[in-house]
Image 1: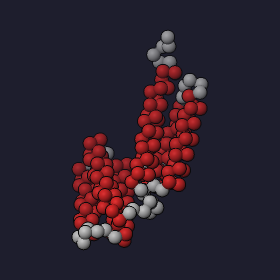
Image 2: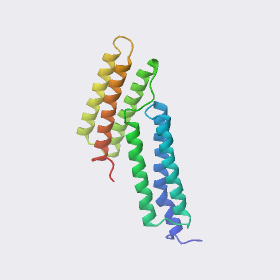
Image 3: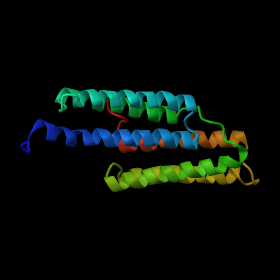
Image 4: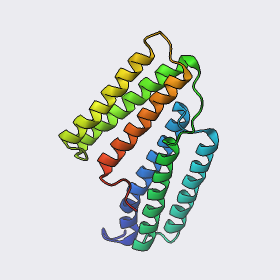
Length: 184
């Protein structure tokens, strides 16, 4: 039986955060594919990065323990991957939306962004003033969507304009929650 403070038992809890973050990043990639914010080619590249991180994690565990340097390198790889996922999901490249899918996509993004703001309030990464300003952005986007749908349909130009507003709002949410973006 190993002592409680042994390096093998200490490695597993240290990597549980790495494992959770990797699972979260995989979900973000899948969600980007599903909602059209990632193209198949972008997702493929991001998944390749996740595979490299998994391999590095496996190599770090090969001797039964993860030292401080290995843990630091894994976290750095994950931060860079997270930034890449964010940037790819928020660039202007996305799968085109069919006319009947435009409003549902906008609505889905609105719901996700509102959830991110609520989560920020809940976990303390956003203050009440920050959240209020971000929710005001969401309200303006909803109003713009209402104007776009006033004739019963959303044309491609209206959709693209709304998506650009959503990308700007998403970046604002991210920056407010991370206070300076992703730290290097």
